[in-house]
Image 1: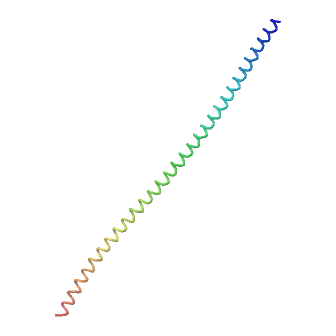
Image 2 (image 1 turned 180 degrees about the vertical axis):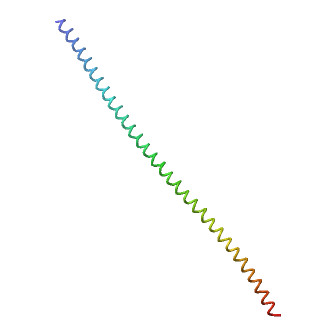
Image 3 (image 1 turned 120 degrees about the horizontal axis):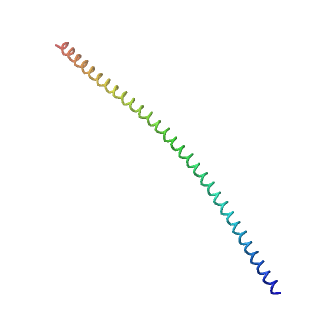
Length: 111
């Protein structure tokens, strides 16, 4: 009878070890799957980050090009205004000469 109890205890111990090993294997599988999912999620996030960074770079480049065009337009407008100012100054000088000439004519006619 003692022999049967020892055998039963031995088989129970082996059974518990087998269950423990199986549980450990299941836990390792779960941990591996979790780790694999994490790696996939990280890779997906990195791809999204790269895509967003590319979009930001493209947006910045487009804005730089727009600002460059605006700068060119501003410079062209400055040059145009400078020409207008120069023309106005020339016209003032011409009107001053005409005014002086008319004043001389009026003075000459009054004599």
